[in-house]
Length: 321
Image 1 (spheres, rainbow, N blue to C red):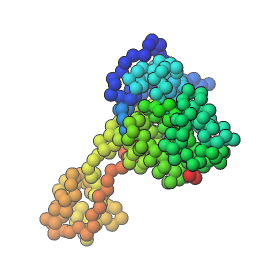
Image 2 (cartoon, rainbow, N blue to C red):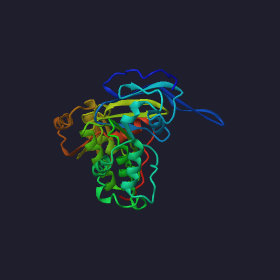
Image 3 (spheres, helix red, strand yellow):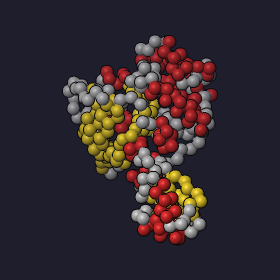
Image 4 (cartoon, one colour):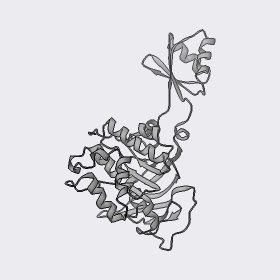
């Protein structure tokens, strides 16, 4: 860190507060800024989504939060305290899954966790608790090499929970999982949030983020692009309505005269510029045109992400649970 004094108190209502964070890596071609003045605030409680295109700085941010790297400039506050070195006591209250876990393939899931618990000074009874929490109690005696990808992801979460963290950082925890594996991890995260753990979740599965997260931050090129509740970012109401009508050309003329924006869509019409679809139906009915089918097109996080970043979110590859 650029500041080396004792930890100082930050605003207590944020689990994470980052200000002006910049991380420059030196390469043969000069400096490369993985983060370029990032500001980020994660409220305490619930699940907060952390999104961005590949190379936007998400994993670098996680590493800096964990003290695994030092920022070039900027400040980081975690759980109300400024992080000044990797040995800060506050980091003992943070669990994380970042990168590939260092489990021993020939050891059982239980033995791998026992070794980690001993190193962390955690009671042996806690191993049984975290195995139960992630649904691996019945597979605890199986060797790690025989675990499926989904089981390995859950064991990594179990390891992150050994010290009963107040803050959990999950970097792509569902990447490569099939739908059953995604659902299993999602259920674990939901239970943790309900029990009071703050979760910062990096993910490529925007449908899951929209369903699971109470708030979200989107970064690009190492800077914050948008942050807030999912509803506030994508809009709580309807933004567009798709309708079918017997005379699309006449309906387009009527609706545009009424101030709507109309786009043809394979014989149907997509209408925007309204706060309630009843206004569309009334405008058409006043012109003796009647809708035969009307469907709300609700906003989604993936469309917002694409519009904001100019990049489609990379789709994860399917694996096995």
